[in-house]
Amino acid sequence: MDSKQYIFLTTEGYTLQPGSLVFHEDEIDNLQVIGFGSGANEDEAFQDLIKYYSYLLESKFNEVFCYELDADYKKTSKGFFLDDFKEPEYIYNPDKDDEN
Image (spheres, rainbow, N blue to C red):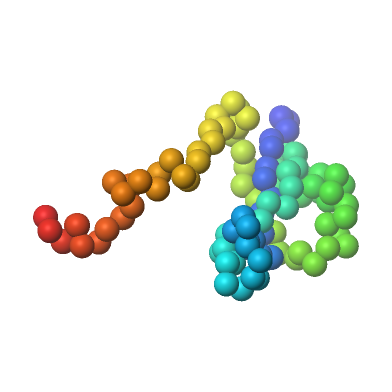
């Protein structure tokens, strides 16, 4: 059976915005990437994750979940810069929707 690629994530932990100095004021609610694994199914991929990233067993992370990645996921990657979308026409204004 073909090996599939999986990404493992967790909601545990915290992320700060770039340049942040204060922990709880600039905290971002998001996911942490734990690692990647491959296998015929999710269970085999998790075993691969633990084998390759064995230090995870010594970390404070506990609850992880995974998504199967498309076979060509590396070819379908695209990056974005949020600064490119900070112009007024891209910023949501609920009052503008009420005008229609």
